[in-house]
Length: 369
Image (tube, rainbow, N blue to C red; front, side, top):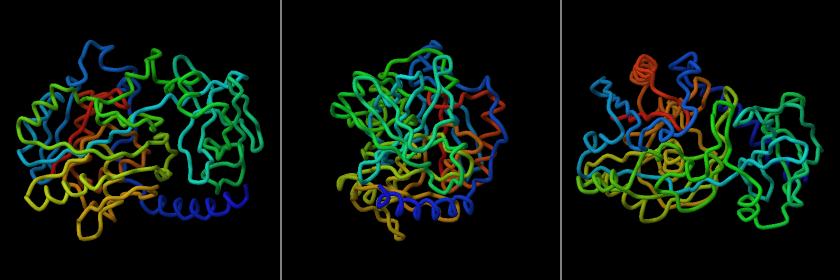
């Protein structure tokens, strides 16, 4: 396994250095615990498309409050929504000693990035007591061996949260997970929500371990209203890993695919003067990966390690629909690249004042040029 570890070590050292140089200038200091969405909006008597939507316009310097059902009001004929069709898989596997193994990302070469956690209420919390070489016994004859901490530049294993692991399953992955695993849930979750609550209306291709949550508010009725107005919708795929990076950690390598038709529609929209709106940071990452300095997108597939920062900027998109991110999240560097620091700070201040809800079941945020 050393042949696998050495190139990963070199990559991780480079990526951590980049992360330190591109730390987001935090628009908030802390999210109050009572502003965390502990379950889907349906559990609060709402429909998916009636979560709140904060709309921030960079050029005008304005912030407006609406519901997600109002989205067509803020888009124009000729605009293009780019959506992620990756479906969420049940990626939390119980171990026979009472812990949980969270799958994150299957890496080129077959190893996995995983997280060892302990049950806490309906969710789970980080478990930092695992050791390199430890073998976890999984249900149904499965097993996992922890090879090394990931990122791989940690000098001691005591504080390791993510691991590079070898996974051995007696059945094909999706079949095994369907029988023995459940959706990933964190300590703020109240209730054991089924997998369907972690899917967007666009979900067609299983592969994400956490929901691409920016698309969750869409419903067939809302999509019909958007199409009737002349707003286009086009797909790509990016399979998400765990989103809960430590402070300053860059997003991890993720698998993506941008079809030729999507690249062509993005280019045609921009050429015609329309706006390209990414539905989520996952879409942003995939689309920016395949877009050159001239702003033209190309089809592509593979693994992306791109970190979008204010220094780099964005090339393919004009606007972003996203959720609300924790202060330490590297996602905030991406948001600042799209919107700029001033309107981003104004948005987060307004969201806190109006008590918007955070995390995958929370409210949404539209950043317009």
